[in-house]
Image 1 (cartoon, rainbow, N blue to C red):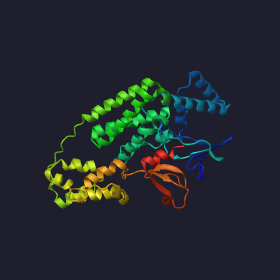
Image 2 (image 1 turned 90 degrees about the vertical axis):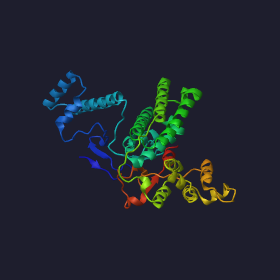
Image 3 (image 1 turned 120 degrees about the vertical axis):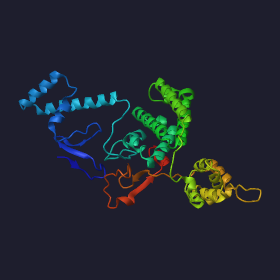
Image 4 (image 1 turned 135 degrees about the horizontal axis):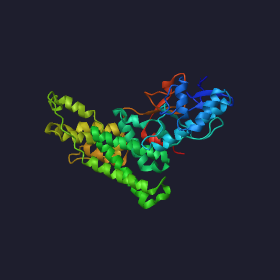
Length: 372
């Protein structure tokens, strides 16, 4: 019978007892058949096996002889079907049932091997994450950091998955017109990295045929052209609009924005918002949100009347210091289990107080977890 382990070395894995000991069961997204229905499992197991072998298996089953051999043949057929599924479906990778991954940096007496960035990219289901607006900016920023420095560390399967998810990101922006500026920056960084690798560095650091990378570079240039030609349609609203709100409410909404470019773009829509977007108090709050007082003292920008120009101060500090990142939802890391996961998906934690062990992971921290 299956054993659901709570052991810290293998939290939540499913084990089955065999003649040679306990064996871990690995489930894939395309294997969601009912395990209790033996007839369906038998049909699925022999799919892809030659007809002669199938009659031989049925004869062995009817005579109740060599049942172990029958199981081995069925398991071999299932393994072959998994491999064919992987090779034939170039647009999708294995979809794992568990949306978490154990982060292991070295071999121990209990566990051998280590976790790579590419494996985490395949296991954490970023394809579904980009459909959630709370996670879209987080995934796009993470992919931007991978494009800048970690692209060559990905395996061939992880690179294929990376570009498949990137295609979905671009398609979502073209359909929903959601945050095209962030995706443009992502594609610009990826394009410059690929040009440097394919032209200046050479093919020695790239996994796969150089022609595949040239085709990917052409695809990126096509995506950039589509985003540059993107036209956001004007919203037709018969009810109350943003301009109909009182000035203090409009100003309060502007103070909630943490991106300076969003404030500038919003100020270009009407003369009233243009006046509100130039408010010194608004830019002062924005500077205090992203930067510390010590950073202010080193880069003071004064006007002719010896007042601080907070808007110019913001863009000056932006060139020298990293800004504070803010996301609707992030990946979390369990310090007790060493597991990386999406918070709403959960993970099999054996701690007495799981919430006290959780730590939000920024995109840069995610990259640092897999640096050895």
